[in-house]
Image (cartoon, rainbow, N blue to C red; front, side):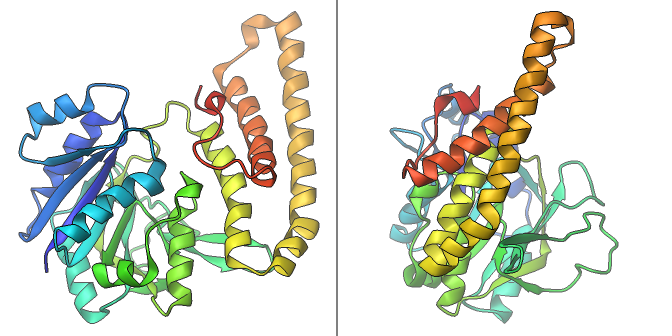
Length: 322
């Protein structure tokens, strides 16, 4: 089976090179690596040509986000005759048996989408979330595992999830041909959730694979990840519900869940604003970067809700990245 590994890069040249080098330490042989540079505003491409010159690099004309950037790589892999595509975050380091873990599991479950066993970078006992399951009563996904300490018992076997994390996503080409590509309107966050749920409706399961181990740095391409995360999580969560549930269910969720949560967000933002301006007037020396980021995150959350209702999708306002 020929596997094309798609690595999306945005400004993270050192992380990307480290990721590629870890791939070439694997025991697996039949794979190709493709870097999609998402219009990085630095010298990423020149850096790759110097440090990993044999790797094929595709350059985009603009930042297409996770969904659009990976779609470019997937389309290329399909044209090259790939049997499977492995989407891998650039800020990861993989285990020597990482790809073989996916390949062995895919033989037992052909046609399934597979997600990895993800550890915090530099840790062997602390998990990151592998994916999640939809909780209809709460109107949201519950991330799995809920307990992030690896007890060496609970997550040793293959398990079905409603979605698996896009950090390391193994997909047979037949699944992309059946389901299609990622929805690019999401830009960042929820795109792999939407895609996995769409696949599930077509009879394609998403499975956690304990044998494919990866260490993830998480959000390395964002200077201050919380405001962008807050913006996209709120905007795209509503958009996901719109795309995957009935209009009646969407309206019910807005009335019973969203309105109250937006009110709480507005109150918290008002309190942070009040705190900020009080300190600005009387105690400027106590103004911290953490306070500024928290205040910006509440603003970004509310702006994400507004942009959903005004149908403003794509990469979001520039100030959330400050």
